[in-house]
Amino acid sequence: MSTPLSRALGVMSSRLRAIAGVTVTYSRGSDSVDVLAIAGTSTEGVVLGDGTQVRARVSDWIVEASALELSGQQVDPMRGDTIVVTEGERINTYEVTDVAGQPCARLAEGGETWRIHTQLIDSQPVGT
Image (tube, rainbow, N blue to C red; front, side, top):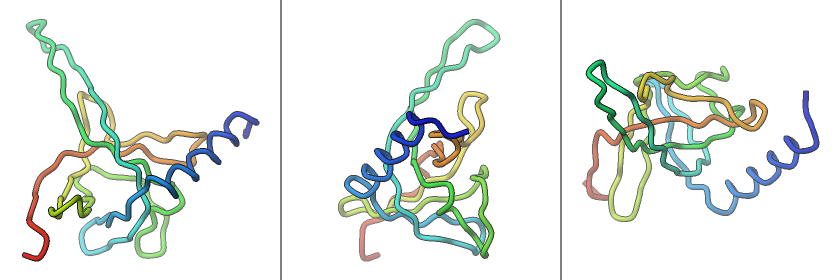
């Protein structure tokens, strides 16, 4: 059910994507779609069996759920999918991944956006 607060957050998120968003290519196998995304980071922690705490900093991408469409079907992010984006003079490839025992993505803003966890797996200079 939509509340005034969730609707306001949705409007703010849309405006933020328009101002701070970058176009990324989201791919699964040979299917891909260009979407507007906001880059972010998360720090996740897990405690190992011996009590050691491990923290990982991951790159997150926030995308509108309805924009994530492959082969004409709206899809949920899946581990192993990739996001390719030009950042400065580099073309960076990020792989969608689970983090610290948590799923690779979670819905936010009442199900209107995905927060997708990724790790950088490749970086090439622009023009190669």
